[in-house]
Image (cartoon, rainbow over all chains, first blue to last red):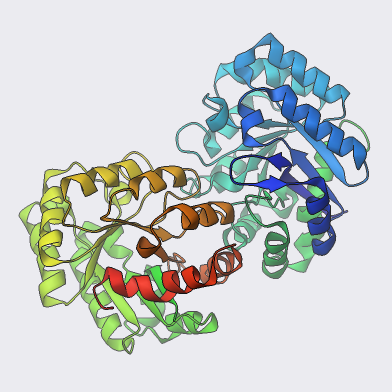
Length: 244
Length: 248
């Protein structure tokens, strides 16, 4: 199964991706399923608006879309409630965006949320790369503290934490590397170091163009890596909670 | 005409080819790139190799059939020696511009000698391209600070803020002596920058040459497929680079 591990559905400042447009892009790129996440605004504030929008879209296309949810940990108990509510609506991935949500990735602020995610067998996608508060080694801290939880290092620390990515990932076996913004020409060589079983392809559409990113990855990636990196690895993580 | 305004001659190329840029240029040929602004790598990583790398860039340009435009560098930590190296690059080696990488070279944009260099570059008409998008010495706002202090000097943000600071790069580009090189932001950011920034001060680059990985393929394709008016695309790729260097 070919899965795009990170797309953003909805409208925000510079982009607008409808379900119809996403499905068209997926069909063109021969992507069977896509994880869909809320837009930036609803990662930062009013999380439930974004989560509900995404879960409704996923519910309307259960064979194509997989819902991700996000809650800002600064909401405290309300964040935990919203997380549980989102899981009840079918969310299968929790998104952390430390830059937009205003904390340092390894801050204890997020621990209650990660404890809940551990109980619920929900993997965590962390947007990495923003300097200072969303770095690869901060993900390693989280991965060590929550060894039963799977962490997806979104964007491989792109751009200027690219040096840290391989060592940070090798330090904890529950870290997976997601390709978007990491660029195919640097992402693919990483996998020979970290292992193809820990690579995950995501387009980050519509910030990137989905069909373009998939075409570029097809050209850059050895055939033998393709099934694992472009679907099976993320599927394995998502299905710890149950079949998709 | 396509000019790649952000490339490097990395150590791996020296090891493989010495001063012969033909294989390096073959990568450019593969993608239809006609000319390139070429920066060093050794001169940004090691003070002790800076002068020699500047000399090598000059030789590469000579061997490149007019296709390579070398940017020199220097280390402000050397004080007057660093300033003199800047003068040598421009006046003796004939380099039209300079490249600095403050976080790798380890100096602040507030460094006094770097201020002297910025002033000198303005006096000599040599633009300064800096790495940007990374704290704590290379943020767009810091380069905008230089632009305020040295209004005669043209500054290029070598990465337009990379992936997370491109909005700051747009702010920096309010200053008429700040240019943006589209080398790093994602496609939607590139489109937004092209809509909002001064079209006369936009460049494109690939960051090719650190190693052998072909970054031109991806980054040129992003720029070509982005939703940008064709006339602007042509201007960015083939007109603005010459204007920056007063070669138009």
